[in-house]
Image 1: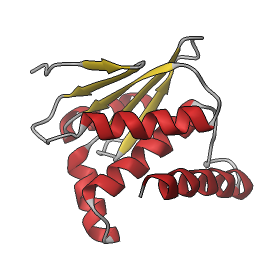
Image 2: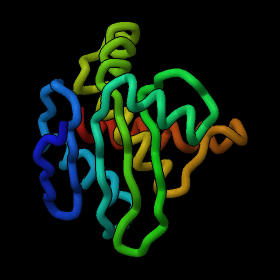
Image 3: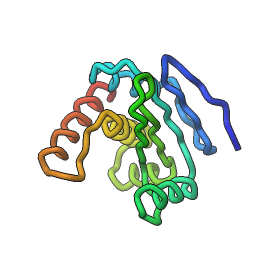
Length: 143
C-alpha cells in the first residue's frame, strides 16, 4: 500500500506503515542536518515495516533480520539518497533506551543522513566517535 508522498524543500517522506509520522517535524530534522553540513541537496525518508526492512537488510548487508535504519546513498549532485527507518524496531529500542519514539526516530534519521554524507562508524573507533559526536550535536539542537 502506497501512502501519499510529501516533498518539502527537497525532503521526500514516504510512510508505508500505519505508524503516525509527523512529517513536518522530521523534515525539519533532516533540514537541520543538511544545513549544518553545508549540503544543499534533496533526500528521501521511507518508513517501512519489519518485513520490508528485513528484505533490504538481507539483500544489501547479508543480515537476515530487521534493523532500525538503513541508508542508501546515490551520490547524485542534487539527490543524496534514501534513509529507511522501521518504526516497529525503533519503538522497541526507544523503550529499551527509555527515550520517546520521536527522539529515537530523530536519532535514526540523523544517523542515516550522516551515513549518506559519508560518515562511517564501522571501520574505526575514531570515525565512530566523530559520527556519534555529530549525531549528539544535532540531536541537542532538536530536543
